Image 1 (spheres, rainbow, N blue to C red):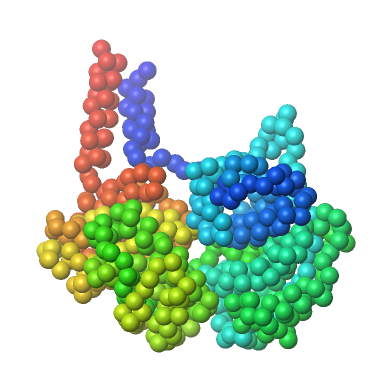
Image 2: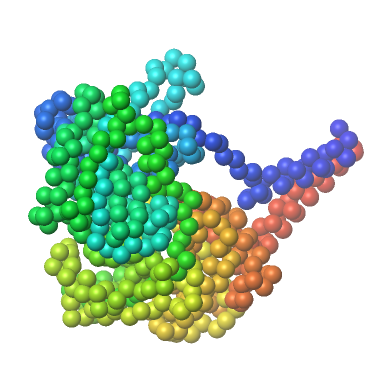
Length: 553
């Protein structure tokens, strides 16, 4: 073989082996079914072996109505069906159905969504198993997958006594998604007593205060539909008795049968269901950021000074999971709660509440404070209500969600998080050792804003979070957060984008681009140091030289 062929071939091989240059491909989704098995820590009863037993049906409905909202955020989700229960605390065996309107779900993401969710029962997360069912067309000897159960649907309409926001007209907007989730969580328990109840779907929100158009779906294997008067009265009675957490105007409730003639929900309905939450959602145009500081009546642990320690993360998640629901019920524009840091005195919690301020308004600080005071008696931990301090730290004129960073955040079901470190060419001061100091907060805001500029064109980018600073000029340790239902960029792309923006002057921070290092949750690493590239180049050039020499001799 001539050397003129060997050398280009070696160069091509070298390019293909450099990390971050490998081509990535994706495939369009097809109709997909996944077997799902998970275990809940409840005592198994013999009657659960009979799927048609009344007590078993009630358990099935309870679990189904809690699991369906977990996956309803996936654009092509169709339904979840429980097939059987078996002993082992209670092992739930079922199927997840998806259509071809979007890419095929990833098993790891389906598992993570289930594990990140909050239920009235406790999951044994070590025993969860989700596997894709191979279609008969791919595996000739396999039996065909059973279709989802037939459904019947009732159109349920009502008004909520709250001010309408223009963003609610877009069912794909994150604020609308949060509102629809709150409505479903508030109303679904009302219908769990109905036989064969499957779930609730929000179809449309419109003006007048907030006019809700929804569907209540039931399994229709026996060809019957629920009584419309009972459906209407169930919600009206729940509202009158104070058992619905949203302010529904009971006089506006209407119920209409919208099922097709064969007792199933039509494809049009399924399509609308899938668009209730879309993967093309865009972040709010402006975020209102409220700093909330309070004391917990617990003993401070030294590990709480380390935001990356498992004990600290667990405490952060406990607080966020406990407090967030109270703000969701009180504030329709509530987005999230972030824990910034813990410090001594019993445990001083420095946190941030984020609200959608796209309409130009921020929440009332007194209401924010009073919400936490009122919630204190219903939390799993004790708060000193006299210590609660609330401050608006929103940046005027800010138009992206990147303005606010936090030391520790709740890893929600839609967040893909990347660790990022780099050095700033500046002098480290003792104040930067305290992430809550004014100096740290000022630098934190600057870094978050600048990184927001660099990554704003990547779909799904949420924010840059600074976790800590350390000595070595100034070593910044943080995380980049993305909505993983929209995009999951590679570590190589993220490292390159920031380095390029530093070099071309778009990012004005004095970042040393050769120190940028990005790591994803799977441990994949990319950095912009020239050392690795130089070593690979030298290696391939040496190898090419040796082979060329061998051919010529």
